[in-house]
Image 1: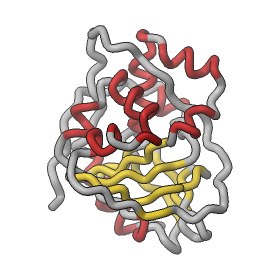
Image 2: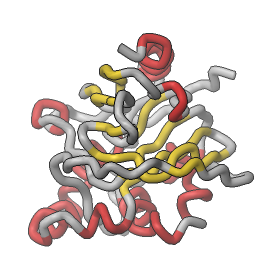
Image 3: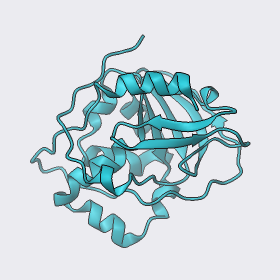
Image 4: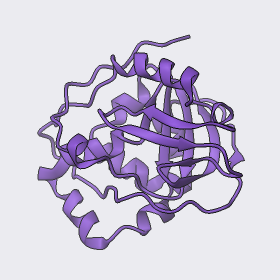
Length: 204
C-alpha cells in the first residue's frame, strides 16, 4: 500500500495548496482528460543536472505543452519553490490524445481554476522516486483532495493507468516522471475551491 511514500506525502500535502487564480493577462491553456491504458514499456531513468522543476521541464522538448499549461495556470512559482515535489508530467504526445473540444474549453481564461486542479492532480507532495513504487500498489496523495492509484507490480509503473515512460528526471526541488496520458481528477475534487499557494517546507 505504499505506506512509507503515502505517509510522507500525506504530511507534506498539508502545507501545499493551489495558487490563487490571478487576474492577469496570462492565457489559460489546454488541460487534461480521463486516464488512459498503460503501455507495456519500461520507463527509462533520466537524471538531469541542476534547475528547479519548472526549469528542467522547460529544457525538455517533450514537455513543452505541460510547461505552457503550467504557466497559464500560474503554477510556475509552485514548481520553482521549495520541495521536494514529484511531478507526473504528461508528454506532448499525451496531451495530443485529448479531444480538441476539451482542450479548447480548458484553454478559456474563465476556466483557469479548473486547469489548476487538473495540473495539481499531477503533483505528488514529497519525494516519490520510481524505486519506491516497484512491487507495490496503492493510493498516494496528490496536491488536490483526490488520491492517485500507483501500481508498480508490473513491468511498467502506472499511475491511474497511465504508464511512466521516463522516470526520475531530477531537479533541485524534486523529480519528474513523464507519463503517457493526462490524468483527470474526480469530479468532486475538480469542483473543490482552490486555496492560496504556499510552497511546502523541505523535508530534507
